[in-house]
Image (cartoon, rainbow, N blue to C red; front, top):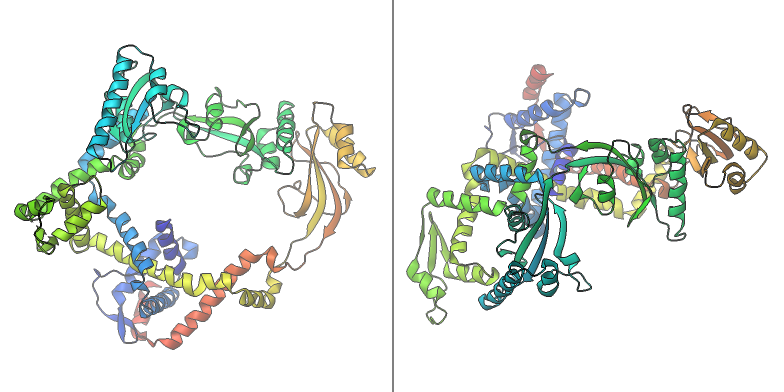
Length: 629
């Protein structure tokens, strides 16, 4: 979400903030006598010129206008001291932490973990487990009890007792009803599906064996591996979904059954998905959704989809929490080569639990990079709980020339249960590195400054333009009234549309429509018991609606029979024609808010030009125009 905001800011302004590392050179313009340099503007111009499509490229004059406006907004943000607001500083620090993450990784360790993850992805493990819980801040005596309990459970299994029955007695991984899931059975899973220590135990234990106890953040576990098989990879399917209706609980089931019958009679899956599926995002694509793995989709959708054997196979109707579905297998995606997946896996490794191992490695390097000293005599006094000497202000750790007090150590240990003074040293080394990286790495410094200004302007526009446009109901209504001519309905038809797969049935439907028969009467006369020949949908349709047949001529009454191809026939009964007419504000509120925001921003920019004196060096601008236009 945060990165999206920054990207949005860049696109919005058409410029990117200049960083402190660029050479200054000659002044191009000033704002209240504060200089903005030609080199700064050219950095922005050339950077945008390389990434913007040819039709969207702007001239030097247009870029300069955008850049001046951008600098005015930035000046206003700092004038209002938005950079001092706690919410801004908090969010900027989040950006900073995201940006610095790659610098906190040991590449050699990361590469090893990426290759390990790939090798594991090629297999799926089916396992059972037993969990004995303890809290993260548990006392040593409590963790010892948990460890003794898991050892006892393992000994019973090793001695020959059934794993499922031992899980029922010992495991604390239970559902809300207090029941262990099917004897601890986890089904099949692959890399990244479980916590990393759990995954490692499962992949390093032989089939039929029980692992030694291991610890995660939830407690102690043992794992029994039931099976290992080659991974099924990913698949892509198309689906038709009919959502449940609160007012008619039987509607979705009846509708999906009718659609399934139409499919069995020869109707194309993609045609039916486009016409009837309630999943609007996939309906326009003939029901096709993005590929997914077995563990990345809800059950039973995933199981039913993966059980389809051949490309083109179609499932029977089935239900999920979202409604009723029919699924068609489109494509299978076996595990790709390592070189193809390497970058994607590296991102997952960096975000997951494996990153802890990488972090430990970077600390080792920082200890060699920086001069640091831990004062053991002071440390011993802090750690001695019986010590009465007041040493609150004593220095316990020095990194380069920066000192850390005993008070900081005490607060750290209180806030981070389970951590010790060694963790304190490691974390302070990382903090020192993070705080000084801006002065050690030019690329990082440049990007950080772009984030800093982009986020600041986002907050300013949020406050000054976007929120105001949404909440200023009187101003929005006045703007709409003044520009009402810009918001109109297209020509529309109030119609019932009949869809058939046989031309003779479509002709019969047309005849019955012309006789004034109702939709239900037509269904009774045309459909033959379980065989569905006609489906209806009705409403108000703009003349370019995809629901209407191609080439449809809008006029009242019953239309001719239209055919998209030799398999699909449509008849439209137009009850009324609604000519182009003005929309009301509620019909088009989102578009009006967007237009009102643009209007407010233009007015605001005029105010900023009046508030701050802008002096442009015209001769230098002419030279730029001559060179770059």
